[in-house]
Length: 461
Image 1 (spheres, helix red, strand yellow):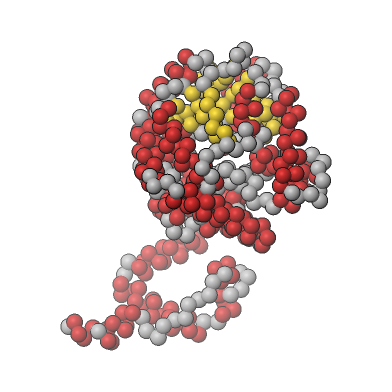
Image 2: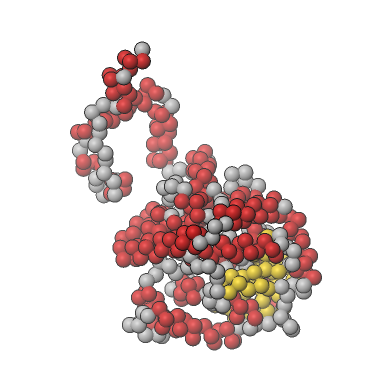
């Protein structure tokens, strides 16, 4: 597939000043809320380290814990399925629904089903999937636009955008953009789907090996309705969501919503262990490249991610460029390190959508070294010759210059001299993207090496 041009897509978002400013300020407010919640908990750093250690332990014993989970879930009356990739996941889910003549499905928020592109797969087979999360529903109504954030899928939209969208799709008042009115309009449009659906789907935030149960965290309660009203409940879950014991759960629950939204806890932390009376429950455990990533020395810790979005809320590039510019279900810093493992060629530009300031690492509740992994992906992209020709040529020249002190000093001295008389029109023009938002620094009269040789070198002979 054609490589994602994150920079070009970001330019489109940035050009819409009103949306760009709201996006930046709102996400920074979430980051500030996270910091305030952190400051209220003296043991915050202890929790982060404990969460990181639990995840590291689980991932390094993943096969054992997955087998334990399957045994206990099966004993609870749950049917467990294994999917090696997205195609197998979609096939399994489709077969479950077709065998039970399911035509409509109400689904709560699930990044994994988006990752597997499940909705279009089922639509081709006559099965309609309705998103019950309000943000995901907004995106679905907007011509099936993908989510732009892991936690708040429609965060790039203003309430006026939603009012116009709802007026066009569910016939609400286009002139009333009050958030409460819009939420109620969304709620009323979804209720008939809840009541008439043939099956419900959820994802899961955590799988618990010890009990064979899983936990879904939401703020709207839609997952509970999706799972409990229909007789059939299917949960699609990535294998990395596993934790060993029920007592480990408290560590992650304390970190998740505080990191994501700056709130003490999600409104609903729902535990699912067995089918409802007279119903069915299926869990589809999905690999889809996770085992391969687990074998990557520099990148396996990315599997610790609990999908809180804190790295997005703090990232200056993401906040200003919008999530849709990343061309993936997983945008922002976490997407920058996840996506190249899925398709290096397609996502080769994403590791360069970063200032490498390290803020993403500092806020990650499970202490993933995100900025270091971004750097490692840049190295791999260069080694695999995936850089565009112009950038590759420039880096090759820079490598030769930086490898030779003598050549470096000559080049710097020469560039300083040239830059003093260089025509501005050659730098600041529509054809040179570098000059659009930058100003060349004033060249010094002498390089540091020249100054040292003239003023201090004699003192050390």
